[in-house]
Length: 106
Image 1: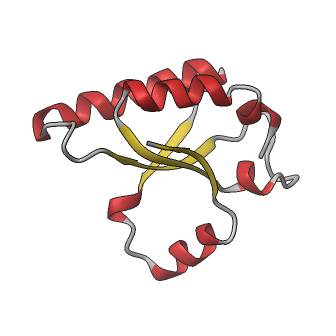
Image 2: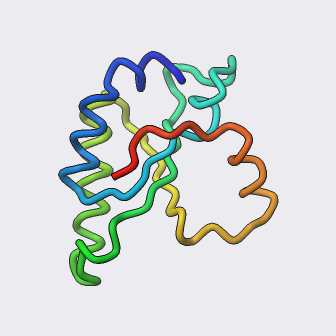
Image 3: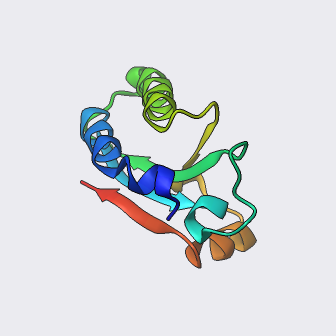
């Protein structure tokens, strides 16, 4: 886990509680701590929301507010949120399973 995420983990977890997140994982180069992650890299996160907590009409608002709040906490222009419920590509699933790091489970 990169220091940027590790140093802000409690703030990230507080946002997860605020935005009804069920689970949040760090994926990609930030999870691997490889040299591919630079100051210009985005932070890739795999998420799922609590189904009973968010109405269909409120899902988009919740998603975008969560994304913007993460960007403020991490002081980065780009946070990529990948929905766990919509993963279908078996190659992508295999690649993230090897590196994903649990940040929050609620």
